[in-house]
Amino acid sequence: PNAPINSSHADEEWENIKFQIQLRTGNVIQKWIDDYFHLDWNQQMIHMLSKFIDDFLLRNKQTAKMGKTIFSKLNRKVSKPYFYKLS
Image 1: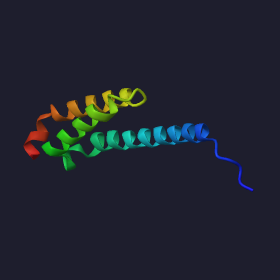
Image 2: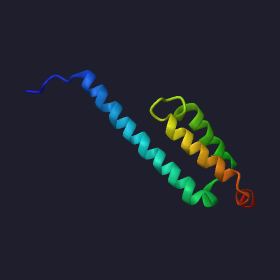
Image 3: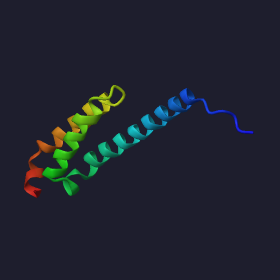
């Protein structure tokens, strides 16, 4: 027989899994900015990532620090002159 599902335990487990996914996704975005910015990024992508950071990462207590870090890295890359030469 199956044991009844404890919904609060399932909710806590999902929140933990969701947070781990968010951290991993943030790490991938940071790596992409660090290593491949000059190859892949354009103005539309920068705008969309900035909107994602503002609308999601900075508004979530668990991801706000990561959002600030990504936004800082993005701003540093955008301010470099080589980016504008490639666009």
